[in-house]
Image 1 (tube, rainbow, N blue to C red):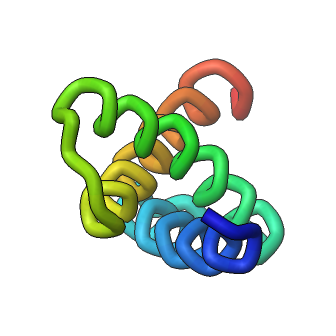
Image 2: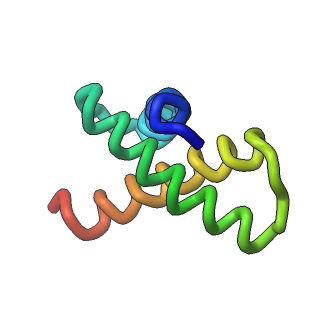
Length: 78
């Protein structure tokens, strides 16, 4: 996946995840959450489910971003 697509999907996934988890962040943090969430969730979903395609990657990106927010709240933002 090229870098532009990763940023766009990461921004969308980060936006959705931060809204679902009720986390107020600035735009670069939201994009970073989405991109790292995409890496975590996308790789995990592809490994566990062996599903390919952009929809599974997007779903994994949102789930990964939500997991990253949960970890952030649990261990960093005290």
